[in-house]
Image 1 (cartoon, rainbow, N blue to C red):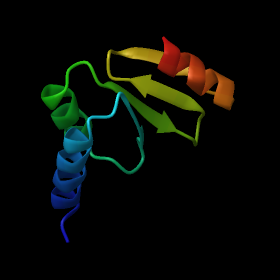
Image 2: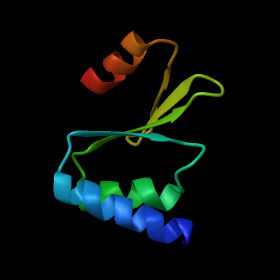
Image 3: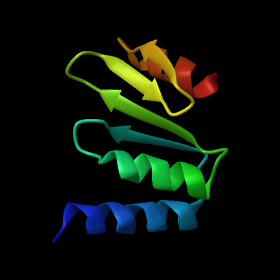
Image 4: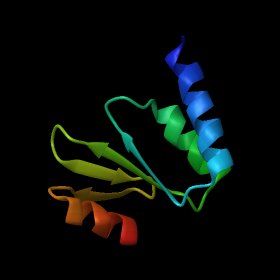
Length: 78
């Protein structure tokens, strides 16, 4: 199956579920995945996590150093 199709299915399911926060792996997800979710739900907090170098990317263009679970919680809480 095409990964773009998988991303579209995941985005559709997440939009239907209406979460407040979505955390995704930057190494796996296509950029279109995050953009489609953000367009569908602009208030959704999207956090892309790169475990290789310990960074998190918040779609609002904020970048945070992610070293521990507490760091991740701080990103979520704002």
